[in-house]
Image 1 (cartoon, rainbow, N blue to C red):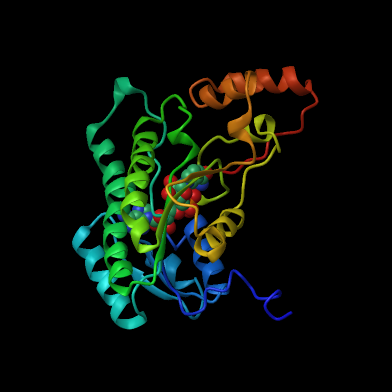
Image 2: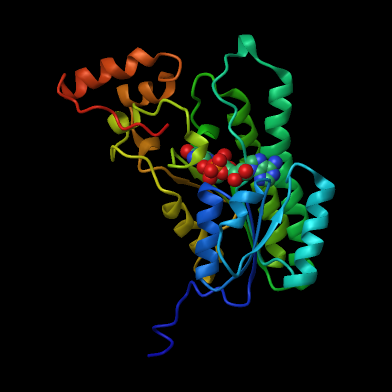
Length: 284
Ligand SMILES: NC(=O)c1ccc[n+]([C@@H]2O[C@H](COP(=O)([O-])OP(=O)(O)OC[C@H]3O[C@@H](n4cnc5c(N)ncnc54)[C@H](O)[C@@H]3O)[C@@H](O)[C@H]2O)c1
């Protein structure tokens, strides 16, 4: 009976490194893994946000786009907590909406350096520790629905995330012999500061569930991917978006063009729900 009731999400004795842990999904993942018993090291640029994570979590102010600082942080984690068994690499920035015509190359480089290269630096250091420890491991990277479904004006961010999906497959192939899984979470819109300042009024109209997701809903998927239950899942890109990727027709059109054609949302609301539609939720 005790065996039947064993908590399969018990991560006691496992060291988890979570980046982007000061805010949003990384923060929720760090807390969820801590609750599951993992020994958590939380990394972020934002030291103030890290300071409010709570007791029992090691916090390190790290710019994950700096390869030397990342290597140093992983050494520090290994010597104080032990080798990483989990890497949940959420740190990223969003680029805002830009047309190709006005594109600033400096912005593009910055986005790729943080979102793509920064993730890769963490994966390299984590994989080396996991291989040396020879106990397997779990690597989770964050992509986005934007990698698979183009939204007008979202070029550098979408590209920086699609690159991670492309790298996950060869990483999974290389690391499977060490019982290390590599998976990518591809969220739809999630209620975090990353979406602050964006006009999201269309989401409560066009998303199938008429709401965006929560960081805690993402953290449950992270916990499952870190558990023994997912040991045969690797090289996967896992959408978690409340069904938005499954929709077709006018809703998909609105999702694609709403940032560049704001009137479209109002016209769709009127067409779908009539003029009595309640005021849109504001997430900004
Ligand atoms: N919120 C969404 O709707 C959404 C949708 C799809 C994918 N994502 C992805 O989910 C992940 C988590 O984002 P979130 O929604 O929690 O956003 P968020 O802005 O709340 O959190 C991102 C965190 O990354 C940190 N960060 C940024 N650059 C860093 C750097 N160079 N070094 C260290 N830390 C850095 C920030 O300080 C912040 O704490 C990201 O990879 C994001 O691209 C978000």
